[in-house]
Amino acid sequence: MACGIAEQGMRWQAGVKPTPLPVQALDHATGYMMAAAVLEGLRQRRINGTGWQARLSLARTALLLQQHGAAPQGEQRGITPQPHDALSALEINRWGIGERLRAAAYLPGTPMLCAAPAQLPGSSHPCW
Image (tube, rainbow, N blue to C red):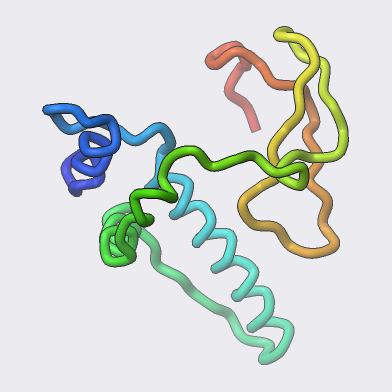
């Protein structure tokens, strides 16, 4: 909330106080950058036989997102779902039949598989 992204949430909701966005933008974006860093590290090891190091932070991700700027007003609302947005398999969960959305990024040749159907938030035991 302190980096200014909540101000964008306030504008998006046409509110009067800072508002979190509907997604955890910093967490998601930093996670994607971590995954990209791991893949780049593996590529460097394969090509050069060397180690690789990446330093990431939520604060740096906030800065990068702010530097990128917001989408034009017409593109922020009313995005129409496309048939290719969902995975091909349907899922039966406690709410009925549903479908999962594809990940925002993927590594070719690695299918997205979900080990369990969707669950209520907080209903799973924390474990590795």
